[in-house]
Structures are given as C-alpha cells and as structure tokens.
Amino acid sequence: MKTAITPTRAENFSDWYQNLIVAADLAENAPVRGCMTIKPYGWAIWELMRDEMDKRIKACGVQNANFPLLIPIDFFNKEAEHVAGFAKECAVVTHHRLKMIDGKLQPDPDSKLTEPYIIRPTSETIIGEAMSRWVKSYRDLPLKLNQWVNVMRWEMRPRMFLRTSEFNWQEGHNVFATHEEANADAKKMHKLYGDYMREVLAIPSIMGEKTPEERFAGADHTYTLEHITQDGKALQAGTSHDLGQHFSKSFGIQYLGTDGKLQYAWTTSWGTSTRMMGSLFMIHSDDDGLILPPAIAPYQIVIIPISRDENEDELNKFAENLAGQLREQNIRVLVDTSDMRAPDKMWKWIKRGVPLRVEIGAKEMDAKTATITRRDLGKDSKKTISDKELLDTAKDILNQIQHDMLAAVEERNKKMITEVSSLDELDKALRSGKIGFFKIKYELTKSEDFEKMMDAYKISRRCLDEKDPSYVYVAKSY
Image: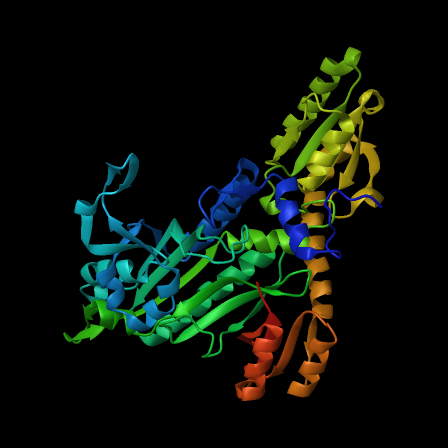
C-alpha cells in the first residue's frame, strides 16, 4: 500500500521521522550548523503548547521574567560542578565588532573582550546572581520565576526538534526558605509536567528520579519524564531539579530569617523545550504523516469543499457558514478554498495531522450533510452525517480523539516495558533485538558488567521507578 511518507517507520524509523517533518511542513535545517528554522505550521503547534503550559505554570504562583542571553564566564566559574556538565556545549562570544580585513568581514582584533561571554545553555548562574540581589528577607520568599527563551548548546549530532544547537524552552527557577519547601516544589513541577503531557499532548510519561549517575550537574535530586517512542527508544521530555544550596552558596542567595539570622536559601529549576514536539511527532504519527491531538492542533477541523466550477461560490459559502458556527464553539477551523485538486487537499491535511477532516460536495450541500474522517482512525472512520449532527457533536468527537490517542499510546507502552531479573536476562533481550524499556533492580546496574553493556548496546539508566525506587528503567535513548 502506498504511503505518504517513505521510507515507512518499519523500514527506517530515523529517515521516516526526518521526512515526516518535511511532509508536514514543520521545519527545515537552517544555514547555521545544527540549528533549525521552525516554519509557521510548526510554530503554531509550539504556540498552543506554550500557551497552555504557561497558564499552568502561572497557576502555581510563578511570574514570567526575561534574563540576558549572554552570561559572563565568571558566573560559570562560581559553580564548577554545574559548568562541568555544559563546558563542551558552550558557544563563546569573544569580540564585540567586525572589521573589513583583506576584503572580508572578520572579528576586529582590537575588539577582543576582556572577559568572554557564554551564550546561555541554561540560566541558573545569571538568575542566581539576580536572586542574590532580590532576596533579602524571609518576606521575599518564596520567589518563583520562569522565562520563555532560546538557548544554545553546541550539538554534534543534530536532529530537528530532538537535538539542535539552538532551541526554545521555558526554564523555571524558584527560591525557598527551607529544603522541605524546595523539594516539595520540585516534585510539584514534575507532576505539573506529567499532567500536562497526559492531558494536552496525549502522552503518558514514565516518571521518576534520575539515579546519581544521571542527575543534572549541580542538583541534589533530578526528577524526569521519559517518553517511549514508537521505535522503543527513550526521550527525556522534561526535568525538575532540587538544587539544594549549591547555587545559593555560589551566588550568595541569603535571607534574614524570622530569628534575625542570615541563612542560605534553597533553590530549584525546571524546564521543558521544543523537544516535546519531537516526542509528540514520533509517538503519535504514522506512515501518512502527523496525527495531532486536538488540544494542540492549529486547525482542529479542516473543511474541504469539493466543487465543480459552476457551484464553487455557493459551496464555499455553505462551508464557511458551517465553519463560522463551529468557531462560535471555540473550535479552530479552516475552510480550504485553495485551487488545489481535492485529492491533493486531502493528502495535505492528512500529512499535517488535522484531527477531523470534513468533505462537502454538491450532494452534501443539497442534503445538508457532511462526510467526516478522523485522522487517528483513518478511512475506516469515514461516514456521512447531517450538518446539525456535526455542529452538535464536533466537540465530543474532538474530545474522543484526544482520549483515544492517549489510550492507544498507553496500550502500546505496556508492550514496550519488560521486567528482567538479571543482567544476563537483559543482555539476552538486547542481543535478540528486543526494543523498549527494561525494568531491572537498580543495584544490578552498579556493576562493571552493566557499564560494559551500556557501551555495547548504547543504553542508559533513564529513571528510578516512581512507585518502587529499588528498580530502574533502562533503555536506548535519543
């Protein structure tokens, strides 16, 4: 059977993913190495994802702010353990102007900076410096901040939406008077992310704490959300960190307590990024293109008038009237009146993952009906209903699609998690080509034998089991 995306997932998952992004018109590689240009349709998805996340973050008492893109290298030197995790990925600004030399614009040797700046890979250091000035008393706590920005981490093996040198994200940074408050908040934001991904992206997460070997540089605890992609690999979709007093001591974040004594505060950081989009695309899509959950689909319904030249205006008017009534229900609707052939229009919106496709021809217009097809179910769901039924049930259909997409991933994930009782059993499963997550006793992964398996099979510890931390999930990852 011919598919819109070739090769198929089964034939070459990596190439399928790259071609999916092109077919759905989401993004393209930029002229800057390792970077991407997100195209309007891709950005519209991100805006919907961002806006809903922003609402949930603000509901936790967090305020948005914006901090500088350039960070003095001296700030990084204050937090050596943190810097060690990013040193190989940092882009460095060393000059402040260009000069024409030998007919080419080059950095002016006379403009070399006394102290280089780092293009932010993350903002704990520069936000920590600001917090040291903003926090003086227990009355200033808790201080909860978030910013929506782009960051730079020089990527050696870029892949759009998964690993790019520049990407967009939100990063939250909170300060508390006690460790108990800080740790509870780190867990709260971890749960917020899990709820968001389940309810909005229709993706269930494997949630738990990173092992000491894998935790964020400079953190006491790192809580992660791991997704299982269709090829069985892990994708880290978000993290929340209990940073202890590492950053408060490095940057002097102190407050005067109720007892009149000066003491160091406790900080957290938490973030998600456009990597969630890569997860969304890899988890839900099929060999014909995207399948988008209605919650973040730029168009939840696309109406395609199938006209003959003589009835085109009348048919378009009928379609626009139907769309207007759907929009009154706060449904995002597009009427495709372009001059493309009807089959080409259908394939365009199939590839772009629109949840519900509505086709209207002269026959439907005369009978006041519409032919609808759910993207997640495909042609087997195609049926003709009255325009009144469409108006009465459109929201219910979209809600059902959202529900069914989550249920489908949950069912698939059950088959992708295997519990093993020994390293030999894990080795046998990996050697046989079995894919997915493997649940194993954490103690068993502390041996040299497991370290060798990590090198041989390119696996890693993803996180401890949230319900039983004596177990850890192991998988190959993106």
